[in-house]
Length: 410
Ligand SMILES: [Zn+2]
Image (tube, rainbow, N blue to C red; front, side, top):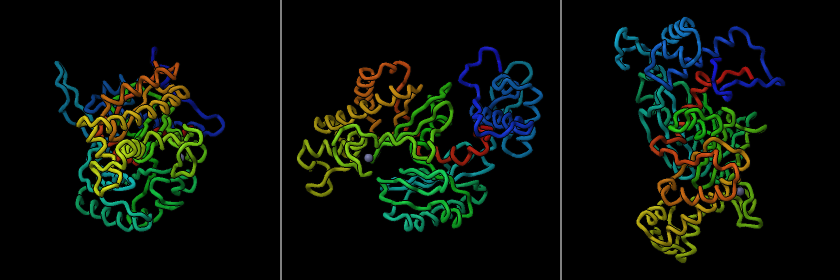
């Protein structure tokens, strides 16, 4: 390790559950380090790889040749031109494999084909069926179609993000109150029908992965919280560089911590959950209450308007819509203050349509967090870049993890 390296970069080994490191493990770790540095810094020279990794120049060259031979990496001179000797630059061979990403939401699901750079080559959406069996029947032909449309791309696997939790051992979907699906095996039928390995992950965890892999705020960050705000609220926690799953895979359900004692009923069966007061559905309820069933923007008279309409009205300056969004923001702040006080992350990235109004909600949220949490100074709270599509992009990271992620030494 280089002198002056931040201590947070040190790898911790779990001494109760470990594999002894062999020279093969060391080679594997170095290979992943180099592959990841190429991914995040491409185009990059061998000299810069050695500088960034702290590895010997000769070690870097051996690994680079191996990665080129295996077609993970290609060599080209389209980096910056330097004076004197011109180094050749390395970049990912983005055509080597494709990854199918599936982002399931209660109303619609998007399906995309991405290259190794997590660039979406093709994307489409379908209506999310009420039953998981029907959903699989609708999804499979779409996936097959995407694969058929780009025969030059070999698919590596399917990553799925969903608004629910997946049991770590059984890989079954076990908790998805906003989808209304009960205990279900989504993985096996999808694998059987497509012949591709399937990785399932909670949407907030997928977002956390996306933000740490591709996000613009992830440089030097080891503790990151992704908070997804949609029909419900999800949180994905990366603590000390690791995704926190808990013993069963259910960790991170802060959306269902009780914020209001004896409060309103939640789809999870409890009362007063944070998401009942701070989700998109909450803002719709606040707006409907203040307008008397929210006729403005409603498709049918007397029906509550969709969240998009409330958001649009607020953007247009409608005072009742603005107040509904403000109320949602106050509850968001109250919940985030708990997360900041309890976990003191480097950064919280907020994901969801409501971030379009960050100028309005950002100050409300940070003000409440500042007032309630004494450790707030260390935590930045920022909106995501929606064009990054973190829910979908996280599924790509999910599949690529086995090549680029940390090996299982701990
Ligand atoms: Zn709940």
